[in-house]
Image (cartoon, rainbow, N blue to C red; front, side):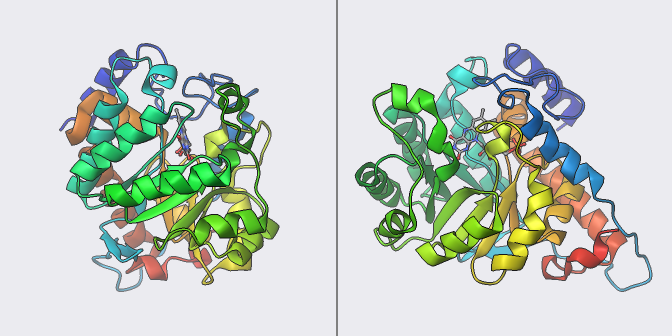
Length: 337
Ligand SMILES: Cc1cc2nc3c(=O)[nH]c(=O)nc-3n(C[C@H](O)[C@H](O)[C@H](O)COP(=O)(O)O)c2cc1C
């Protein structure tokens, strides 16, 4: 599949909600929430890109990493590349409305499975979105992860049960959606949670539990205390709080605090295989990618998604050769200049 063609189609199909810029960096869409941008000045989104960009790589070529293995194991599943599709929801509100939630998520889940990775599905103010996402996930034998909004605990636990019924192999909560006033306006308040409240949710399920939206080492330690299996170091793609630092800049100190105790996932500004390599070197076990899956699916549907992941894998593999890493385990901060 010609990926330039995918991007051209995406631009048309996104109806102006995304300009499909040469680099998806949050500048053209600053402040467009709802939409595809970052909140307020848009700086938290652009900072994700700049933080990653500011790390440079040590090139090394005298070694034996001739045919690196890009695969990992996560929650008992093999991934051909340490990438998951981030939960991205709201096709009508955010993506120009040409395609439905069901079309979007089925292309993303299907394309991910075709390429040997998995998708996360999201939750919004409208209950039917999660239900649609779970229905599609079920049709793919539950091969994916559901991320629920931080509603009142009873509501979160009910939704986790629905995800279990759909067969999801892990669940989680995007706790950084705690301040989304739009959700409260729908009569279903979201909010921050204390350690006991998170523990109650974690203990309600036997599935691995992921807490998404951690940006400081102290909160990563609280997440460990609450018993989670994984965190996502994330500022929600810059969509919830203006003026946060870039994820790549806070990741090393978070990794120093909790690496090995729980799985560390991270997202924000990852666009290609070199970005994946950098995030892993800075301490992530795997990364999530958000907006590029919107362009891949709106431009090339299921095949576009598969093709995007294959590109990321081949970029990652080539970058592993040139930094001397034979496996994902071998990627560490010695490759950062
Ligand atoms: C349009 C849009 C909708 C999103 N919806 C959700 C969601 O429902 N749940 C969630 O946890 N994160 C959501 N996110 C955040 C992503 O999961 C992810 O953290 C972020 O997009 C990563 O940054 P990137 O897009 O630069 O890769 C959304 C992001 C965008 C752009």
